[in-house]
Length: 61
Image 1 (cartoon, one colour):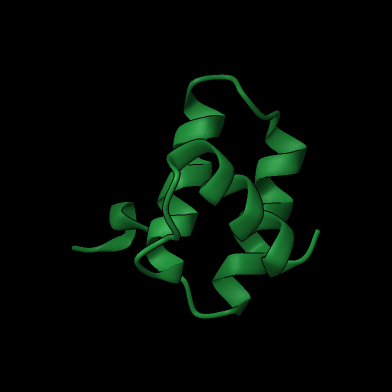
Image 2 (spheres, rainbow, N blue to C red; image 1 turned 30 degrees about the vertical axis):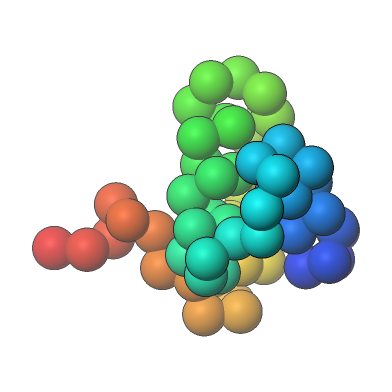
Protein backbone atom coordinates (compact mmCIF):
# COMPACT_ATOMS: atom_id res chain seq x y z
CA UNK A 1 0.00 0.00 0.00
CA UNK A 2 1.36 3.42 -0.89
CA UNK A 3 1.14 6.66 1.02
CA UNK A 4 -1.28 7.91 -1.63
CA UNK A 5 -3.63 4.98 -1.02
CA UNK A 6 -3.50 5.55 2.74
CA UNK A 7 -4.28 9.24 2.29
CA UNK A 8 -7.12 8.51 -0.14
CA UNK A 9 -8.81 6.21 2.38
CA UNK A 10 -8.37 8.85 5.11
CA UNK A 11 -9.82 11.59 2.90
CA UNK A 12 -12.76 9.43 1.81
CA UNK A 13 -13.72 8.67 5.41
CA UNK A 14 -12.93 12.05 6.98
CA UNK A 15 -13.75 14.37 4.04
CA UNK A 16 -10.49 16.24 4.57
CA UNK A 17 -6.78 15.58 4.13
CA UNK A 18 -4.74 14.46 7.13
CA UNK A 19 -3.14 17.36 9.00
CA UNK A 20 0.12 15.42 9.24
CA UNK A 21 1.64 12.00 8.77
CA UNK A 22 1.13 11.53 12.52
CA UNK A 23 -2.62 12.12 12.09
CA UNK A 24 -2.60 9.49 9.37
CA UNK A 25 -0.95 6.99 11.70
CA UNK A 26 -3.43 7.81 14.49
CA UNK A 27 -6.30 7.26 12.04
CA UNK A 28 -5.07 3.77 11.18
CA UNK A 29 -4.40 2.96 14.84
CA UNK A 30 -8.02 3.83 15.55
CA UNK A 31 -9.16 1.61 12.66
CA UNK A 32 -7.19 -1.27 14.18
CA UNK A 33 -8.53 -0.69 17.70
CA UNK A 34 -12.11 -0.62 16.44
CA UNK A 35 -11.59 -3.80 14.42
CA UNK A 36 -11.82 -2.20 10.97
CA UNK A 37 -8.42 -3.61 9.98
CA UNK A 38 -6.61 -6.72 11.18
CA UNK A 39 -3.27 -6.86 12.98
CA UNK A 40 -1.18 -7.81 9.95
CA UNK A 41 -2.61 -4.95 7.89
CA UNK A 42 -2.10 -2.54 10.78
CA UNK A 43 1.51 -3.66 11.31
CA UNK A 44 2.31 -3.10 7.65
CA UNK A 45 0.79 0.38 7.74
CA UNK A 46 2.44 1.22 11.06
CA UNK A 47 5.91 0.20 9.90
CA UNK A 48 5.49 1.95 6.56
CA UNK A 49 4.34 5.24 8.13
CA UNK A 50 6.95 5.00 10.88
CA UNK A 51 9.69 4.73 8.22
CA UNK A 52 8.21 7.86 6.64
CA UNK A 53 8.70 9.72 9.94
CA UNK A 54 5.32 9.26 11.63
CA UNK A 55 5.23 9.20 15.41
CA UNK A 56 2.24 7.77 17.22
CA UNK A 57 0.53 9.83 19.88
CA UNK A 58 1.14 6.80 22.12
CA UNK A 59 4.91 7.15 21.66
CA UNK A 60 5.12 10.57 23.31
CA UNK A 61 6.39 10.34 26.85
